Length: 366
Image 1 (tube, helix red, strand yellow):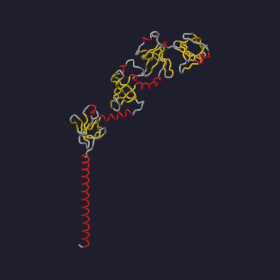
Image 2 (image 1 turned 90 degrees about the vertical axis):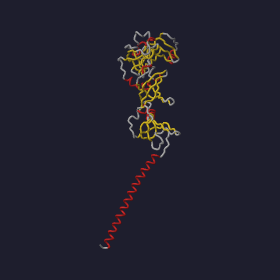
Image 3 (image 1 turned 180 degrees about the vertical axis):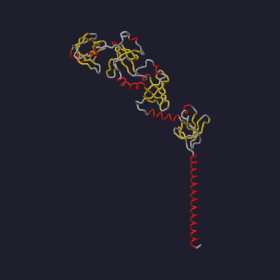
Image 4 (image 1 turned 60 degrees about the vertical axis):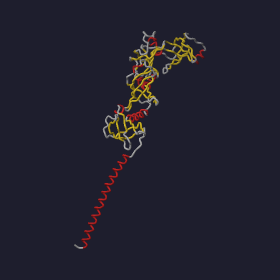
């Protein structure tokens, strides 16, 4: 073998040796890098961290000890402990050993180094903020638990969380409830009025919700159809009735059933009665138990009628035209006439104008 051939073989052998050394070095460095990473992760897992109340951490579920759910949080000296009770368990029922769970730190004792946490508070805080952020006209469900002299205690469920609620008596319905106990034990649609931070209670209103139903309920009323309702109160001139959950109307004394016209004081709140819708003026509903035409239904401008002075006011003279129809001789018209009027005086009058939208009749002396 020539010297040139020997030199060539030696050259290639040297290249192979250097390549082998380089590969071994890279492998060693790779192994060292992986080992360093593992050591770094172990170091970081044991690096002490200070637990802070009212913060959220992530821990690994390790089981129940001393009747508490325990979670390992990297860097904490002790487990985070959550009480083993129903309010917490409902959020942990599907949790398995080794699962990663977010926990709200509710109490940290640095002297004895104990950490108390809560899963319930985490969910409740989120639901609480969501509930407070609802629009003013948002509807929530309230379960009426009990009644007290001031109102009703409720439970409000939102995003799976139950909150305490309170509804004052004045907000329980469109009118005062004739049977205050009638809504206890029921689920009701209500709206949030405010939040009492001191009591930790939401103030709610059923009345506010019912008022939103009125326009649609009025639009569906039909004259000639028989309706059922409950009396909410009486006056010398008629009966007030609540019906269709959110509507209130009045039956004038002249349109009350003849058997009751002279004994309205005996009609008590809560009485159930039948009636018809007579007229709707703006948002006022006029009811009747007697289907008949009254003077109001037929009165026209320029008509001459007999009337009786009901009262003399600063703004004019009130004239009774029949049992349920009243007209006004305005002060300006009284001054033109130049006469004095007294209650009970019979007069012949002339209709100047009829404002059906506002149910007003303007008169003068015929």
